[in-house]
Image 1 (cartoon, rainbow, N blue to C red):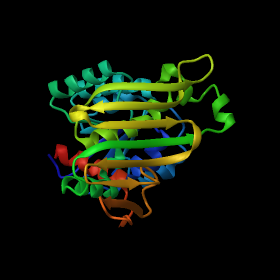
Image 2 (image 1 turned 60 degrees about the vertical axis):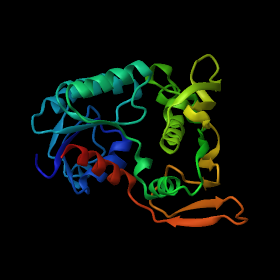
Image 3 (image 1 turned 90 degrees about the vertical axis):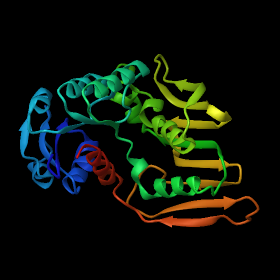
Length: 303
């Protein structure tokens, strides 16, 4: 295979335009071959800036293009599984926006299809590739806090009243995979699995749902992991802005008190305190384009 993979993009979503397509365009191992969208482009300049060679009106055209190695799927949540399965079955590697699937059975089917077709399938959890996350993983692996025992993670924000009342808000539509857990709670679940390096064996959760629907506006989940590690996850559309996580171990603790997931350009401050240490150590990590690091990691798995 060439030293750069060719990408196709299914949909002109905001996350694609502002984050992922620019990341691919400036990556060391990828370039964008085609974009498929039924919506009017915000401007031809976006296409020129990101080096897009071909515009399609059909997602199928992207998947069937023999010059494309991998596709990025930023479609509405309820479409992730169907289009991922189509792309994998056509032999395309897939980077799918979070949440990967709307339920466990969809995820299992996607994983089976990727294995069957010898394709890479990855959920676009960009925060995993930021230097702040990697620094925390290093601290844990070096034994800085002993055995990790507890993870607490929160991603909360307050929607405007206009968005809460909008009939077009996919985040509040159960048929479109809406709800705080799938939208932002997935980050907390991912953080817990990443740092504990174990899988949950039991889960309890409570939620506050929108009146007359099953869509969770605010939720708290408690997870018990193998070897008795624990995690608490909070996600909300109706509380003050909070992006944070902490890891408590048998010999210390690590805290990322703000901007744990986004933004990514500015420096991050990690607070680390060992047992018996009165004042926590402040570890400053420079900002970085976590989306570019993500797509480069994905490309390295293919080339």
